[in-house]
Length: 403
Image (cartoon, rainbow, N blue to C red; front, top):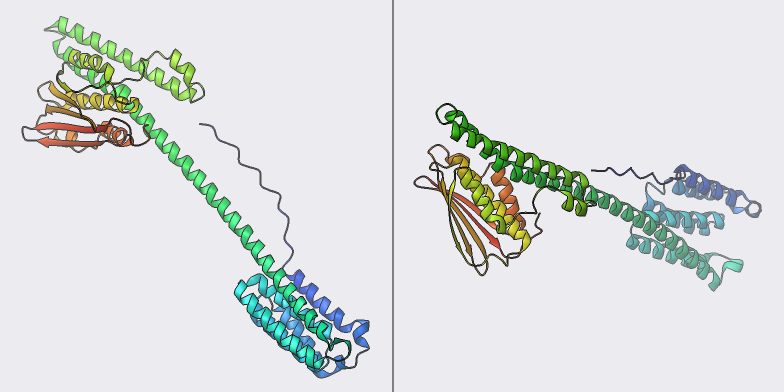
């Protein structure tokens, strides 16, 4: 399994200090207040004007913490400044800065309400209380235009920030989903390897164990039987080594070399019900007599289901050989219109009920996974006798991704 190198982090530009826009707004407010065009005015030096200017500075400083309150206070200060002849540029600039900040940090509905309130209050105030060149329709147009621009710019800033946050969250979730998918694939691959190892080794190991016991018992009294059992053990061990070598070759080659592995591997092709006779002969040589009852044609079963059916029969007969009490089993294959039913029945000795009936063995777990992968059903029961009944139903075509 290869590990991809971690992606290089994207270049990150350091954000502006949070205090910088506030300081710029305060400086701009003071410059417009004490600029040459305002120094010639007499109104700004009065105590009310100084208080209005101080309030404007406070509104700019507090606009991030209290965006709506700061915007409303700026509108009120601007209207008051117009009435007392305070520097008009200063109070209007304060309104624009606080309204922009409110639009950037609140919802669109709040922004619209604040903009309408500011436009209405300041337009009416400017229309009736500003003198000279301001006292005409252009005053209203200028005030409304500036307020609308500030609100729109702030709303656009908020929308862009939310868009970036949404894209970032989607990227994070996509990365988490990719990681979860990779972990799921690793878990599935582990299960597949476990099933393959069990399929390759379980039957042959059972054969080795059985015939090794027979050889040990017959070594002195029946040397011919012991020799035949040891020959069977040797053949089973050779088969296990060959199958494990082929499996390791496939695992190391992966998907890229699958074609070459298929031609060079020493094992036989993927087994199916067509090799059922060979499988039954192996069990008979191992001492398990299998009675087969079959009805219907098995030739039109899809390859994934065919493989699962073979593995089901192999596991069921292996359990019958390991846990059976009389060395015999009944295999019933019934082909129906909607699917294939496989039934394996064998007698079991008392005390082996939990071993064969609860389905907690590694082999039965693997069979359940294989059966579920094609949409089938598995049932294991212990009946009076005691008799173990192994029943599987498989569809003709897989109803899920077979693995």
